[in-house]
Image 1 (cartoon, one colour):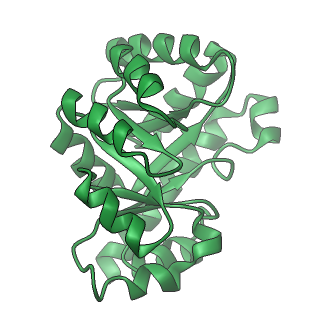
Image 2 (cartoon, helix red, strand yellow):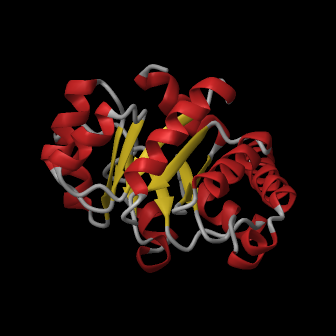
Length: 221
């Protein structure tokens, strides 16, 4: 899947699920549920010792079984780790902070790089380093008023909001109303009790409901 297609899909669907589990089978079930719910991009987070092994298995699985699903890796801090995951087949890379060296690795590989930012200067520097979409993080701390305010000096900036976004109409309307390009959703899509119960149907429905909320907002705005 090419770079532009991934970014367009992210925007059209509006929701990027993000998740980590050391168990490959659990991760597969979560990605399956997200896919059935309508997600077409998924961020697996690099947050455990087994992350690389799980990710490589997930890349192979999604390519074979989930056509049209872009598999990205998140929580990448340095270029060396970025290259490791690029070589493993990552379709895009999400970082918690702004490291232009990671951006350079992504540009060379021609895949999207979505760096974490929380100031106007960081957004500008991210764009200068080649980022087409940036991640506003942590969303609940920075706030939707910030996102709305930067539309003045930066009307064309594409911002995905992660951190504190809820799969509710109030939260979706707040962030997309402020101009979000997409939102990242983690624990609110994958509660521990739901995972413990293996209730993947609940996850599928929550993903579908969240995507429907984005669609409903856009149709009504």
